[in-house]
Length: 235
Image 1 (cartoon, one colour):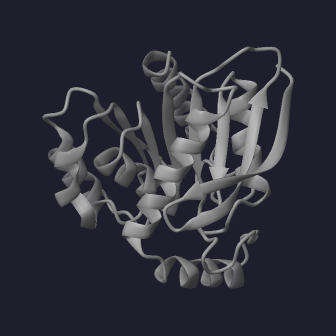
Image 2 (cartoon, rainbow, N blue to C red):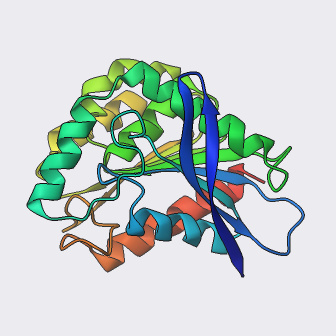
């Protein structure tokens, strides 16, 4: 499926900020997906992820959630980049971030390519935490959270989940140990539309083919499960 991409502006409660939009061509309308970046900004990898969703028939929007500090930031995956990304993430205000995601939902739903259709959210690394938080506080039609650090420390929010959600974790991720994953499993066990997947031998960032921790089998399986989730709940 051919797609088109563009840089767009998003209006939120805190101001206007940028986003990367990918749209499937040849369709009058399509469901939407908000794609939330890692700590490295809307970089080449996140643009590729956004485009992949468009190739699968979705209108995909990756908002720049670092816009208050360094708009347009695109980092790589060196130790210095990791340190910088963590520094920026540490300065974010969670409530303001949720408002930014709300603005991304509103912008996507108002697009003529997506108007009247359902909208989901997915995120990676810190974005996985944001996708979880959006499922707790906002109104996505489905959510898929990849190795979201911080979810275990925010399980008091889980009672707000009212949408189908998937969690994807690597079994050997040192930042998200199995003890934390087990806590997440226990917390969402009573929710019929909540699924927690753990991938053997997969580390943090296993879905990112720009990183040394990329694991093809886990990445393909998790992505296929995410597409199945969205195919079921965003139609």
